[in-house]
Every structure is written in C-alpha cells, then in structure tokens.
Image 1 (spheres, rainbow, N blue to C red):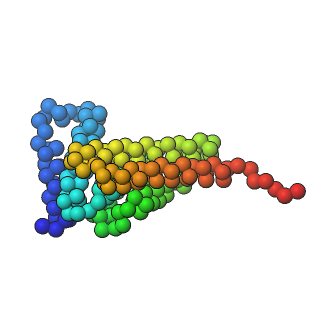
Image 2: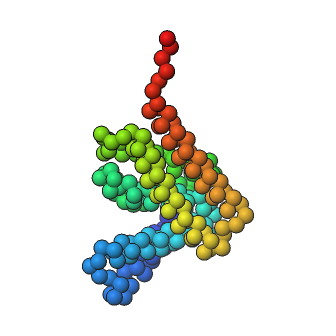
Amino acid sequence: MSTLSALASATNSAAQQAREKPETTRTGNPANAAALKQQLNVRILEASAKVSLTAGNQPQALVFRSAIDRINELLGPELRGPEPGAGAGALPEVAAQDNSAEATSGRILSISTGFYESYAKQHAGEDPEAIAKNFVSLIRGGFEKGFGEARNILEGMNVFNGEVQSGVMKTYDLVQKGYDDFLNEKLAALQPKETDA
C-alpha cells in the first residue's frame, strides 16, 4: 500500500469512528458540533501521523499540517476568505519536501504571514500598530494550538524524544522568532522617517 493510500485509509477510518459516536453526543448545539469537528480533526491528524511516521517521514510534516490547519481555522472568519482547513492537503505534499526545522518553520512563516495584507484590508481605518499586533497574535495563537496538538500526538506515540523532540522544538523556536521579527519589521515601517536637514 502506498503512503497516500495508507493515509487515505487511515483518514477514512478516523472519520468513520467519529460518525459511529452514539447519538447522545450529537445535538443541534453548535458548541457540540464544533467539539465533534475538533475531535475528528485530532483523529485525522493522529492517523496521518501514524502513516507518516511508519513511512519514514519526519514528524515535521505533522507539525506543519497541524499548525497551518489551526491558523487557517482562526484566519478564515477574520478574512471571510480561506475556509478553515484549507491546508488540509498539505501533509502528503510536504512529506516529500525538506522537513528540516529551518524549512518547516520557513513554510509555516511564509504561509501564515502571507495573509497580512488581506487582514489589514479587512481592518482598514483601525490603528496600523494594533492591526500588526493583532494579526501576529492571531496567527501565533493558531500556530501554538496546532503545535500543541502535534506535540500531544507525538508524545502519545512515544516518539517525542531525542532527535524528533529537538527538531520539533527547534521548529517551534524558529517560528516564534520569525513572528517576532515580522512584527518588529511591520512596527518599524510605521515609525516616522527621519529626514536629512
């Protein structure tokens, strides 16, 4: 079975398990629907991680997938554009790419900060400094949520140690530094320019 076939099978299995939940957990309550959707997302990530790790791929693909999914989830309502889960097809593509900490953090930063202009347009007329700070806070929150989910999955699989742990934590540190640098750059651009007399 190919990696993609195994991933599809594992994802379908996770979705089937979620559908087989007792009816008592399914109500018309939107909070319950959101909780069920979150459970399904976690199960799909777990299934994806198992397939990815058994296929010899690095857990960085899981970190990337989880982080981008959560960032999309938070930005979707803000931008009224990208639907939550728009990064859902990311794992199979990134599994074949450079999954070093530097490359993974670079992709996370590039994708998440790439929404800045759209976000700023949605908040036109607001304080530019607040826009930059709020945007970075939003994407940082999405990244941290996704990172936490990926870390929990890796810990649950007893693989979050040694090189895996150091590589994943390096990715975390690089993304956090990247967000700090991005915010500092945006805030510096807002400062009045000094003119030569």
